[in-house]
Image (tube, rainbow, N blue to C red; front, side, top):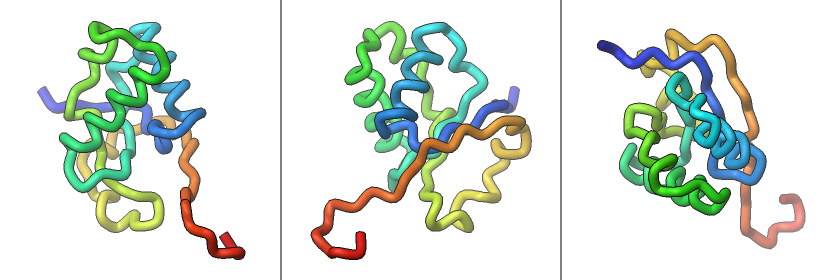
Length: 109
């Protein structure tokens, strides 16, 4: 059976997106969700999101419900690299909590 998520969450590794993702997992409502994660490969994204969920107080059993099929590697600044992913065809809702993050010292940032 093909995975057909209904909800796309961007920014799930951030403060607000992480809190939302953690709440979905804690309430058992995470099965129809896909997460856009800045990562070069799904395994890296899975690890990053699992760490975020752990930081939001989820236990190992709750985090174990996260699977690699829920990770969409990409960046909102480079949409053409992920927009054709077939899992997006079933998306009905998007919650965007992503932001441009920079740790530079440039005055215009």
